[in-house]
Amino acid sequence: MTKPIPEVRPNTWSFLRDPMIAPTGFREYDARWKYPEEINLPGMTALGLGLGTQMHKRGIPPVIAVANDYRDYSVSIKHALIIGLMQAGLEVRDIGPALSPMAYFAQFHLDVPAVAMVTASHNPNGWTGVKMGFERPLTHGPDEMGELRDIVLNGEGVARPGGSYQFVDGVKEAYLDDLVGDFKISRPLKVVCATGNGTASAFAPELFERMGVEVVDSHNALDYTFPNYNPNPEAMEMLHDMSDSVKASGADMALGFDGDGDRCGVVDDEGEEIFADKVGVIIARDLSKLYPNSTFVADVKSTGLFASDPELQANGVTADYWKTGHSHMKRRVKEIGALAGFEKSGHYFLAEPVGRGYDCGMRVAVEICKLMDRNPDKSMSDLRKALPKTWATPTMSPYCADTEKYIVLERLVEKLVAKAGAGDTLAGRPIKEVVTVNGARVILDNGSWGLVRASSNTPNLVVVCESSESEAELREIFAEIDAVIRTEPLVGNYDQTF
Image (cartoon, rainbow, N blue to C red; front, side, top):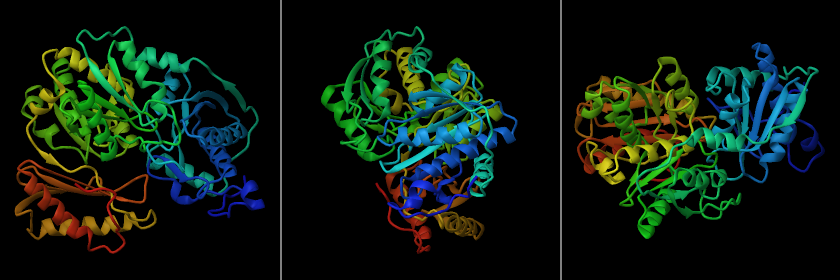
């Protein structure tokens, strides 16, 4: 295998012939690049050869399910990847355009050991990438990504005979059947279905109709130019649009999905945006009644309520705070036998007997409809107001280059740990502890907290804060965390604030 080169100028002979892969695209648990600036089609073929070689190296049977999201360049990228997989001697089962969770489902449905999903997830157009996994329902974490990166960038891919290609139809129908089963809603429920013209447009409206839910369309025509906004239910732009649709239609709630359908955002009947970690607490309350003494995993960006909520405590819940990132969370849920995992970004990991353990925005939509059915006298705003009140920021991402962010974060963690060690206060309160499992989560004596970590898939840091006291305290926490961040000149502007 030819060693890929990190940079090739477009519109050259070399660009059409030689594999070009920017090393920064191999991230903690995703492979993600700007296309064609950071990876070209021969580079994607080299990635496929490397992934197939990794499977052979690990003794995994050489069969893989492959799919692509709904972007105008995703099919050509998938075909380039498939050439490399076949070159490595793999039997490819191409399920066509899909959501990421449909590709994960295909591993079970077709009983194949591996998956490669071509998607840029919620990143804007101009990005591409691959979500991949060998041990269902898990996807590559740092160890697997590191091994794959070395195979690919060192030119260690090995061509083998036996490669083949088969297009498999009917997986979409099987996926929807698996999600809904024979469930029909027994209360009237009107839902704004928001897909931002992304891949979920081909799935979510039909999913709701199968359950007997009344659908209010919101940008549900497939359009890979994303004419309204980038489908990302963590972005305030999408959440505000969902809120406007709820108010205009009198819907019971809005459910919104990201570009590859593995995340779900929620707006209640009053047009209030409920961040996904709070939705997680609502779901955890409901599930812990059905399955007492359950363990729930929450990522470090999530609300402290998983540990402190009296109702969860009464139901015998154990809370486990873990590293942010869909691969980290899936693995943790599986390892400790948790019933579910919740991530503030809108990834939910519902394990047996509720789901299959992977993140699926459609599965969450079904479970939220079931939850509403089990609480026929309650609105979504009733369920939100029943939670202990906290004040939280959205997820905010100041710019920091991929090549710098981890070094910068290391210094920031040191500064925040030193602050706690010196007995300093934050927002006028004593610091109880600094959790450093993933960045630094500075927890105050009243349970309020502020977090800074590195984004795993974009050139950014990530900042989230929560107060159990007031919005004033929340703003103080953010201001003081930000003051520490501003000691690093390599950190740029925020994508959004509050």
